Image (cartoon, rainbow, N blue to C red; front, side):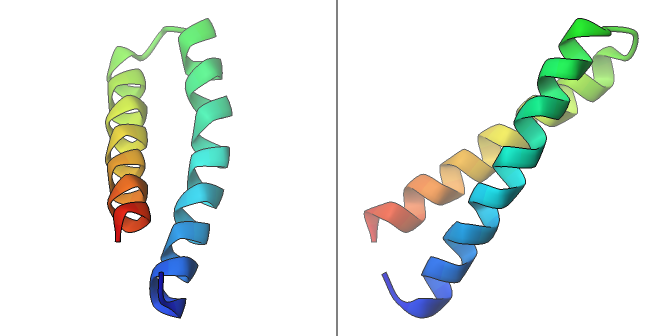
Amino acid sequence: MDKKAKKRFDVINKKLQALRPRLAGAKEQADDLDEIKELEDEIAKLQAEAAELKAK
């Protein structure tokens, strides 16, 4: 993994660390179902990108 990919991977991991607690909180207080769906989609997208970077 080159420097640019490593940097992107680190940024993705930081975003994931921030999004996971937000998702847990949104699920506890499920007054906005769209927010839960958006957070799940964003997490899935970032996880897929991280997996792609790891595969390189």
